[in-house]
Image 1: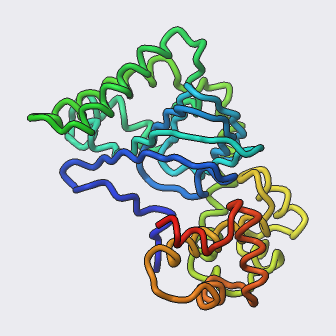
Image 2: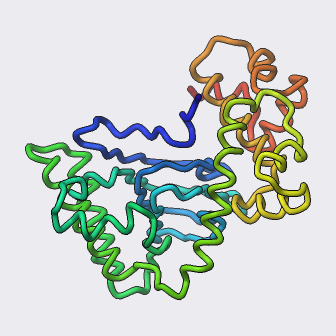
Length: 290
């Protein structure tokens, strides 16, 4: 069973499970829909986009900090063409020391690891603790990038400091839990569908088939899918096929017509049209750029 897209984020090694991704895009799809067991901190450095996290719609501008709890479905779509840059810090909860049995950190973190409690998905810039959190994020990124002697200790310490600041000031209040639980249950039902798409995206997948996987009527399925992801099911399928096509354009010697067929398009014309609508340029340009 493949879980490459949805769970298996590259985190260097098991003893130091963290990685930082620097993203720079002009595309509508700022962040492809996925989920993982790790925590993720995103610092938006330029541009504007809209994050969808377990169905929670979060408009974000340069400077905003986004936090993604373990297991949350998340994606980001720009509502108009603009240059979006962000750093994404992805790390496993073991960096917080919660795996040490009987430790104080295990008691503090366990509720978040078990997903009984969560951190808010956005740290607004007008919050009194915003700059404290941002400074720690910037320092963590610098340590990770420079890799001076002992940087692993510094990175681990910054992860713990940031998480401590987040749970002190940005833990979701109990009164919001009912709504969060509803969104979480919807997201869990859709994870099986995402895995099905990952394994079958090159085949024809109807709305009726997708709806049956999550035990919804086609009407309610379309409504919930749009709520969770910000896009229609057909739009998402096309986005995912183009996402896969990009990897083949860069990493294979297949012709563009062969790639079009492999990712599920029945004609090179249809593939090129959809590709250009999504990316703003034809697929041949992707190879030239690389």
